[in-house]
Image (cartoon, rainbow, N blue to C red; front, side):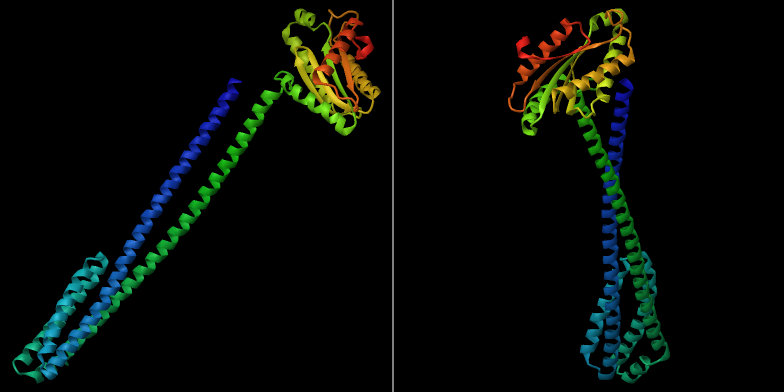
Length: 388
């Protein structure tokens, strides 16, 4: 019993450990998922902002080029003011873009360098216009170096967009990989939890059955105990009326069992009880008595209840039981004249047309058992009212 108790304790510890680990794993997965989503959203927002700022830079650059050229052609101060305003905006946009991502910053350094060269050329053209040299300003804005700067600026911005696009693709691929991991992790954890809960349900059901058996069965023989007998006796009496069958209750007692214990010891007495219990269990399935239930009423006393077609069939079952017990030939020197373990049986019947109380039929069977003992033991006696 000690080993069994320890075994169940170990199982409970293991289950608690698995549940704890699973809970930690679930919390860890949840924290990791939240961290990843926060990181994904943060980086995604940065890339979206970078794309927006890059678009603004291209727009501002085009505005600056157009403003410089229009000022060179028209000499209207409005274009110069517009140029100065958007030059400041472009500078601010570049500063914001450089703060977004270290890798993006390397692209924008080259962009800023080209932008500075373009602005120097455009500001030089504006200065020429201010000095009254509009034609030279127009020529300056059409020279090969200026146009090369524009082309390189456009190429650098293309690289910037390509980087942003690649970063977004890589981020999306990583995000999908993490989502797949989370899905697999959640499914695995759900399966583990389901298995644990199914086992716990099985464990609780097994313990419920075990506790129920402790309440309703006798520990030594495995037969129903006296507590279960009281319920079964009342139910059986009522069932005989419903099924229109003859109900029987029999009390079985081992002859001179106290002397057997005194002579051979209690362990041998327990062995005799379990042997008779096994014999009763083996004989339970038969054609004579239906819905049979067998009980240990206490000590060496057993009870049998069931439904039968006739008293003769019931007595035939008990005769076979006597023969099987005799064949075992369990030595009992303090049980003369037989010299072996024998039993005495008292039976009471209830007709399906006349309901008896549980105490009444028990008392009748007990009186019949007393008559069996008084008449020499090792026999079956049926209760008859005229004998009481």
